[in-house]
Length: 147
Image (cartoon, rainbow, N blue to C red):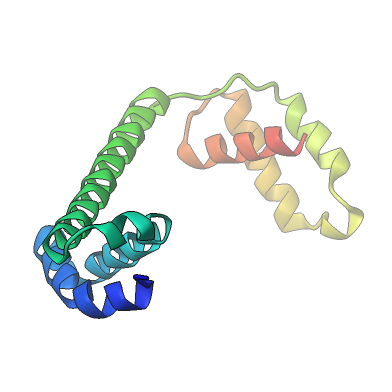
């Protein structure tokens, strides 16, 4: 019976070299090879029926598919981040100045110091004057999540 140790001993070095050529990054290549051997655990019976050349082809094909999946996933992430940044650029959620008053009521007494109150006052002033500076925008979202 074919074991994962046998496969690893026979094919790991070749797969590592192939994955390094594909990814052009040693760490990514190691991850691809590890994932390939994890996937082989579910296919040991199939691999036992194949000759050594077919096994190597199956393993190389698995490395290639994992690499392509990783590349496609990365491209989707970049596109989603770009789309999200376009959608949220210049966006300021509608907020009533009373939101900060309600938040202040929930702040524990031990946290109510002059510096903290000053920050809240500045943020509230930005909201009242409809300023869309980045820092108040983030603070407003934070306040909404708390409430």
